[in-house]
Length: 387
Image (cartoon, rainbow, N blue to C red; front, side, top):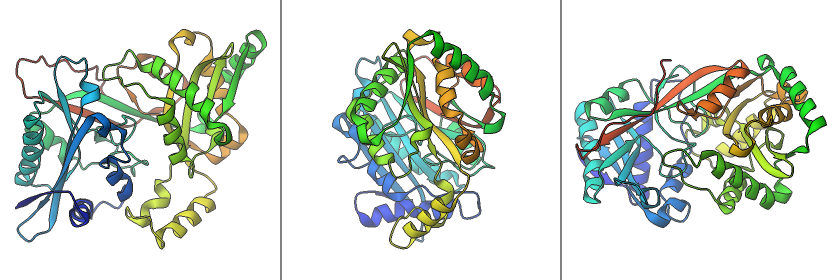
């Protein structure tokens, strides 16, 4: 076997080719876009590099065929104020071979150890926590959603055998849109509008700056109390929205206001993965026209949640009903017969309680694992539920 650091076009091609080997017998698999993965490890594209560093590795077998890959990274900004220095691994893919897995874990862990890391989380993303986060442990029968990790069952064994312990559980809820109790929530929203100065404003690409400002205000207030919180700036939101513009649908993304103050947000977008399957990770002159044809021809789509939050100051003001009322148009129910709500951590009891009112069920589960290089650090995982 030969391990290569990924640092040029040849090694990047080998990095991507690992997927063809691992998933060749899984027809439900949809390749992630190669350019998006490369952008994660491009300092010009990923803000995490401002105070972070990363390395990617690809493993070749004795016939020079790529059979595994992994990335290791450190976000020093997230480590500021933490008791123990943490790093991450992600984008792990490997054939079902323990020697190959051993080589990949060793390479990534040696790199992180050389940086003084005491804790390793994985598989996670180098950047935002709303994509490519966690190991898929339930839901392999479904095709992956856009920017969602998909993994064979045997990966779980690899992580456990290398002393990674389950640390955080991420739940994705899915439901038939027509079965969501919109009418009841619409009644709550109507009474609220009659009694209180409330409003809902849709995503407007012609006036993106105020939307980004208010979105970041609600997001930061909603998630500040959670571990590993990293505030998001309006500039970051604008960049994300501009990148999402080609696939975004303003009719399923909005901000709710209470007495003129941003109080809650909801952001979903059409899942474009079904239109990308033919591309096998490559968007070019041959695959883009087919993607556009499939996307424009589709009469119905699946809505995928990007984010959802309610400002702590307005959590008892009926904001959830306002957001759902905006979503409940006849057009949305027709265009999006199924909705996959924004993935949430199991310990986020407030959002779980809100989702429980929507007649949706847990559709797939991801788990982020943690390895302690310093045995003195106590193992204190977040809450898990049996699913």
